[in-house]
Picture 1 (cartoon, rainbow, N blue to C red):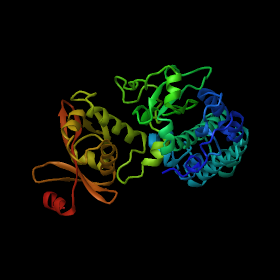
Picture 2 (cartoon, rainbow, N blue to C red):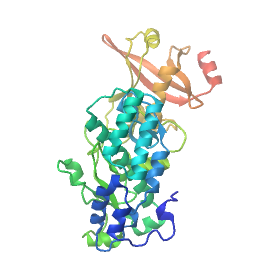
Picture 3 (cartoon, helix red, strand yellow):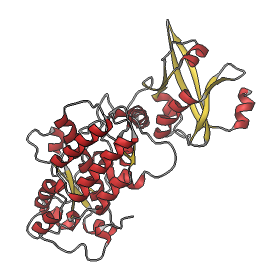
Picture 4 (cartoon, rainbow, N blue to C red):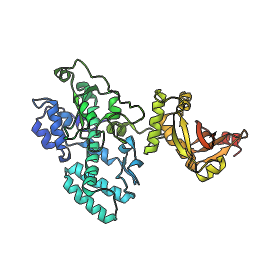
Length: 402
């Protein structure tokens, strides 16, 4: 999986702190200095933070430029496959921003240099953006570099030889003057490399988050006064599916999402889709009681007329429905997050001989059927999704006559 620096023979030799910092991309110099210090500057093996950083560059270059209207258009792990700048709504301008970030990563150019590129891109494309220039440029620059760094470091640390020597990973707070208290509380946390914490809270964990991870050997763990890895922190928060200490759209591991998110099938890309998937996951864990629900689609004008409801009425998915479908192969969090909305917006609403309604349509070359029912509560009508399954043209014709 990893053919970068750590996979090459002789790359794991001991290197000096000065050499490690000298080889570093300028964009990550401060983080690297802190990282080396955290690992022990007195001869500790620091090969895992040595640069040039081929993996980070590869992570950025494989991203697809994606035009957006809002920062909510690309969510969580989708960022590891899609390069976006919130509100940059043409591929040409997104490509230019990607090239500017790529230059910073490969050549070690500074924020000031990126700001010059930013001004040139804005002028060339006549782009009108929201927010103050200083804040906007710093956010774009730092978020993309830190995420690429995190993904590249992850790719290095999961190399078999590296994992054999460094099976534990340690969370480090950035030392920011105005810290996120939860991130500060995690400072020094040592967990096994395969601990579920790293799937959700591998930094950066928010805009401006400078936290990072270093690999730890068993001997180093003992020198830290620990007999074994720490207990996995509980990230669950009552009343929300957003993990504790993690900002919206950062609840993913950049490197893991990059290397593993390649299987076909539904992918939660937008905020709405990701939030549905998170609700389903929480409901399956028993977090949400029966009767709790999340919207998965809304009724268009045509659908509203057919179902005798108001335009924009939500199609709701309840926690008890999710749990009743737990054995259904299609009933995964990702499928619920993506497919119902697709069927409601681009599929057909059909009715069988018994008066039961369903959306039918295609997603990724496969036909699906989402059965719905209208529930009237006084003057209010509600639509509920009651099943989601794969189907075929013959079955649709047999059941719905269409």
